[in-house]
Image 1: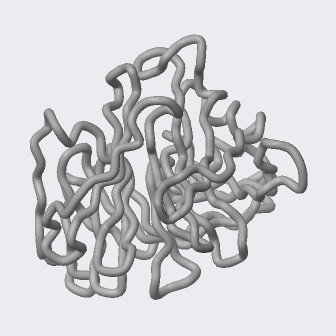
Image 2: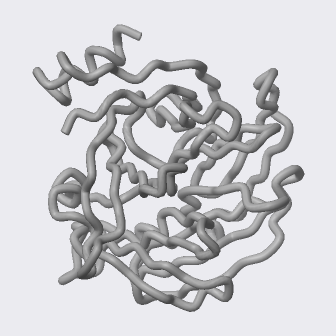
Length: 264
């Protein structure tokens, strides 16, 4: 725990004196803890570029492992349990032109069930969330490798799609959140139970709380919360409503933790 307190103090400086740090509840080692985490009532999932592991929620025992052809399943970044399936965001990152798809897996066996191609156009799909009768998809753009100049990370876009994946609305991200992303982009995102959108970047221990704007095409930055892991794709714990699942990609670790306070 001291390591997490030191990390947060380094990032936030004196502001941590007023902010409660995140509390780590559990850690689960796995080689697949590279891109993100997901969970359901029975299991925890670890996502890697072209593999997914499923673990028993209580014992931590691995229940299933799917490994795909790296030439086909290039960059799976985030997954979410939707009914009996996992809906997983995939792109050809760092390939260009950027192309993206939604990949479906059986949530129990991890058998690949199907795909929906978004093709090129918006960017690289990093996460997708089913909420409010719509799909909410983040298409990232990057500076340098994996990007398509003249677009850069500022061209990252949130798109709302209907059940047939037809786009309905889209928004840019707040300028200060884009500055926090740096050369990278939004690696994880989920709507919260409070009706706000929570987003992580690539490597900061921060969770950006956003809302839809009352007017215009740019999301509004409400606050920033402290988390116990360095960005990447995450998921709300479906049992403990105060907890969140994420990863430590350096240590290949799934992490369950509570979220710290706002710091700005």
